[in-house]
Length: 156
Image 1 (cartoon, one colour):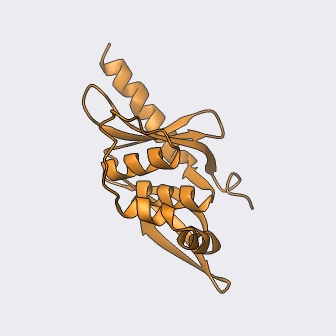
Image 2: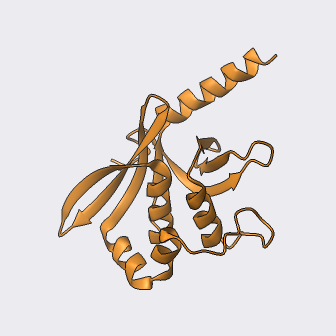
């Protein structure tokens, strides 16, 4: 059974940025069904790392930190990304606890599948550097859309 049949939506593209007005770090997952799934208060280091991966860091941007971080090093060493690619099957944003989303990263070692719970932005970064698929549970997307619509109605 495919992920889509099990109630998950594939992520086609990921953008990460800082909202200019309030400095809020955000990650946007563009989904296979045309919708978006947003993660707010993402660690700034992840926003920077994703933009470096995509080579979208502007010279005068607040994201242009001249220092390297762990994410830069992970992406820089081909043996590390190759090894990650061998072991990561996929990443699924599949749960929420309070207001915090939870991701599951599926790892494979000698045919044994191990699932680890992770911070979604970190798991997404690992999927991006290892070129592995990312999915979001459809009910989480539906719930986020409902909240957005209710918030829009309250602001009228």
